[in-house]
Length: 509
Image (cartoon, rainbow, N blue to C red; front, side):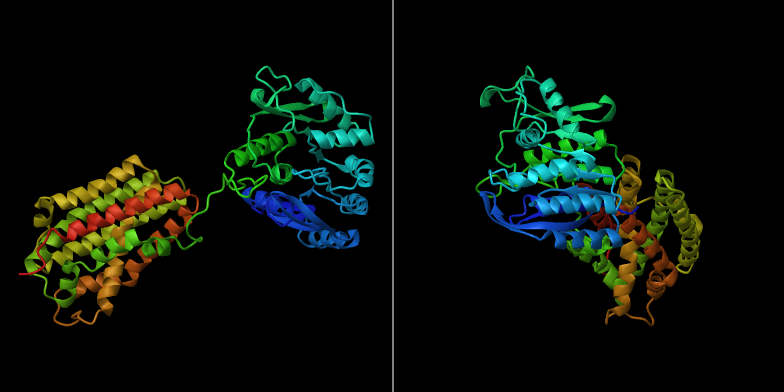
């Protein structure tokens, strides 16, 4: 699915905590595509705004046109508009492009108290932009300024009902929805305006909409200095929800929860009002899509075990032809036992799979194992080992430990975990064969084990390796970082079990 497209018309914050920089972080965290039209450049940090350079409205207009005419837009979000001319221009652009969903954060002052919208521009905001606004998100000081310019003085607020009444008065100025943010006016446990900081308990954001719709979102009061960019971030989170198809109450509630967590988990940067943690619910995998296996083998904890596995003395002795024949015979008898359990595990994987494609892949592996068993039986005959001996042989404890570990993973965990547990066998034999083919000590003539090497270097075997590789790369993308670490541990343990399989047999006479 294409991401929701959000155009942000706002100022730039050089410290990255508010403005366009915060907006883009929020939209990225919500999986949306962000575009920008820059209205002003600011010199600021967590301590305050030092300077503002306003971008001419005509240039901002060109930015808006360029974005909408090419990429298109689902939602427009405005922040710091900086000048009356820019506000008038944005109102015209809303009409020109037929924009129906515009989220307006009426930025008038920074958290540190700096003026970001001239007094004369507030009237233009009320007159030109509010009637075109889909969702307006004022805080208490901004609500008071809006009413002072159009609608009379702000009423005294004592309760949540007073907040709702104030939001309704602002809604009468044109916005379809108004979210009045209560962060500047915390409540007590009794849901009354708190008279002192020690009684601050609850923050209430009140959303009012058409047909008397109302939503009150309660959040715990947080005594935090990490509040830089909360208004910008909240409005962008609402815009993201709308761009993804949420209705306004759903988008608002989710955005309020997002901001509460962003303050609670803030990184504590700067010496003033610090920025939020915009990515508290965004997972970052330690590898790029399609490169999980490369990442896996590059890990020190994996590579050390992997090298022990694929260059084990048993393996190297097969390559140079010095492996005792009786050891190899014992190995291929146990390998027959292993293949049976391996087939069971893949049959279980088919049962565990949730898509027909993955079911079919596992079933195909079982069929491939069946063919491999037939070849294995014929291969054993060349060493004078009849099928009856294979079937009557006792399973070695190392074989039992390995295969039952894999089956236990299949029983107790999901399809992907089972595939990871199976992977060291399939991938390892391929790596071993490729390594031996290239190794200078490998005997390619008069080596009784050469056929084994050729089997696992064959195109048919490599086809199976590619199928499992593609499956793992596809499904690993949906996992969390912590789940990836769990799967890596399964892979390492299964690799150790493969090493134990080699160590069942003497490598030297």
